Structures are given as structure tokens and as C-alpha cells.
Image (cartoon, rainbow, N blue to C red):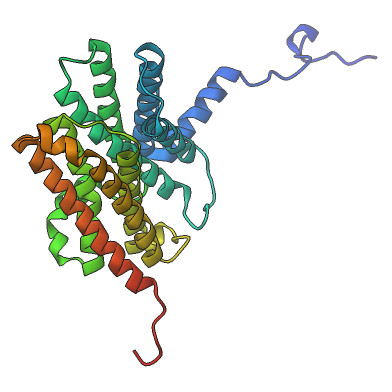
Length: 296
């Protein structure tokens, strides 16, 4: 006698139901957001907005695709990539530290762009002004998130800058020189408004941003290991920044004396002092990089 099935055939599923793709995908995104935290989320949002603003500026407003453009675009995309990927250290530097270095480069150029915007409101289209302001605000969010993601605090670093005179001599000159180059170009664009941010100044600002990153890594060994000794990095990057700045100065001195006034000379003096500080830092870097003689 056949036994009666306790459950009707129609009630027995032929195959087990598979998981719904929507909730699983949402769960994966949520876990990624939870893993990277608030700092990582700011990096993603800020980096995406910076990249989008520059791409729209290039396509719609015919922004120049010079070194400045590519550094900002690729720097923002690199920050996003390093945040999302669980990468191991590259040349001794972990992914989260690379996020901070990329954010520093983007922020440095955004500061210069802010100065250019402040002095060119009557020359730019409304869309260009809006896109630049979006870039600047997004770069600030990117930097804040990158500092948090790498275990630091941007606000604490900014407020702690007043302790610069307590730093070691080489750190003091490097810090003042690198920050001075970036600030000077903000002032040159915002106040002087007679210069163009051409290739050599762009190289100088890049060297300054990289120097600040190298200084941070040297003072925080847990953040990563520099690929070459700190002294050689200071010598190389400081020397590049000084030479790029001097070459630019030589080419604009004649024009400066012809049309310059107090609003031109003051920012230019800040730039010259920053280059002097960088040069002294590079000189001290040479001393730190050279091998010590026995018995000294």
C-alpha cells in the first residue's frame, strides 16, 4: 500500500528559491560603506564631484587640458580607487596613505583655482564659476575625508601649524616653503591677477604638495615607508620646486616691472620667500642624505 504524502505535490517546491539580487547587491554596497567609514564616504563623494566638475568644464566650457587638469582629475580618481580597493602597500606606502597624498595634490590645485575664480568673476561664464566652486568645495571634502581615513585630522593639522617654529630646522624650512608656494600662488591669482598659471608654476605646486606628503610619512612611520631616504626626497622635490619657480620668475620679471604695483609685488615677495625656504630645506636635505663620516 502506498503511503500518503503528508504534503500535496503542488506544495513541494521543485527547486529552492535563489536569493534576490537586489537586497544582496544593496547589502554589499552597505558593507563597503560601513568598511570605509565616514572618511571614506567623503573621499568618494568629494573625489567624484571634483572629477565630474573638471570633465564638464573640459567638455562644456573648453577648460585647458594641461598638467593642472590631469593632476586634479587623476588625483581625484586615484583617491576613489585606493579607498574602494583593499590594496596592499605600493612601494612601502599603504593605500590609505596614497589617498591622503592624492587628496593633498588635488587640494593644492583647488586652492590656486579658488584664487583664480576670485579675481576673474567678470571674465568667466556663470557655469565655469559654478563648476570651479563645486571643485573647490569637493576638494575640501576630499581632503577632510582623506585625513580621517588615514588616521589623522585636517582641522588639527591646520590649527597645529602655529607650532611651526618648534619643528626641526629641515622640517621648518620644508613646511614653510611648501605651504608658502601654494599660498603664494593663491595670492598671485587672487590679488595680482596679471600672471598665468602655466606649466612651471604647476610643477612647483606639485612638488610642494608631494613634499608635504613626504614630510608627513617621515614623521609618521606607521603611515608607510618612504621609497627613498627623506633627505634625498627633500633635496629632489625641493630642488625641482625651486628651479621651476626661478625659471618662471626669470621669464616674468620684465613684465612685472612694467605693469606691477603693490598688489603684484607683495604676493611675488611671498613666493620668493617660499622659494628661499624651499632652497634652504633642500640644502639641509643634502646634508641629511650624505653618509656620515666615521667618528662624526
